[in-house]
Image (tube, rainbow, N blue to C red):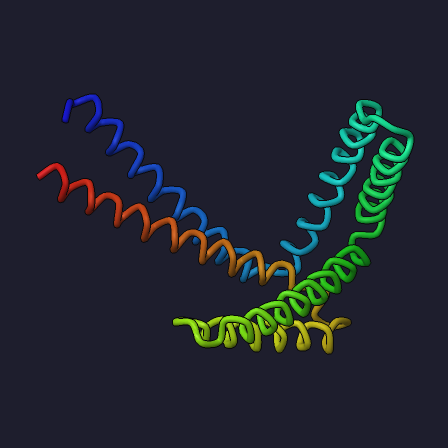
Length: 185
């Protein structure tokens, strides 16, 4: 292997580890400040929806057929309305997103349970059952405590996701580094 390739490889592994650690640390901050992260996430989502509405509006006029144009314009107006709603009422936006997360998790859990019954004889199917049960329970817990949990659930879920993503990236980067060392030896 050339020196240039080796240098690029070491730099890539270094950046992979740095990003993984940064993700883990950011996740810990999110867990420490769940309300602030939830509030910030609603504001970011509000702006993303507003920008998306502009692109959806522009895309509507590239569509063919009155029905397609009307549908895309309706979606653009919906994105714009929800985005503005989130920016004007971020606390209600946090409650709305928490409710949406609860519904999403419930539907996902039910889908996993239904899928389990189709593949229950397959190896590892028990994990699908376990995941479905836990996901439904989590959705019901969030739903039951919606009023009190709306202010921090988003931040906690984002924090956990960032930590798990960082740990996964770190483990994959370290495994790739070991594999590269073994293959070059």
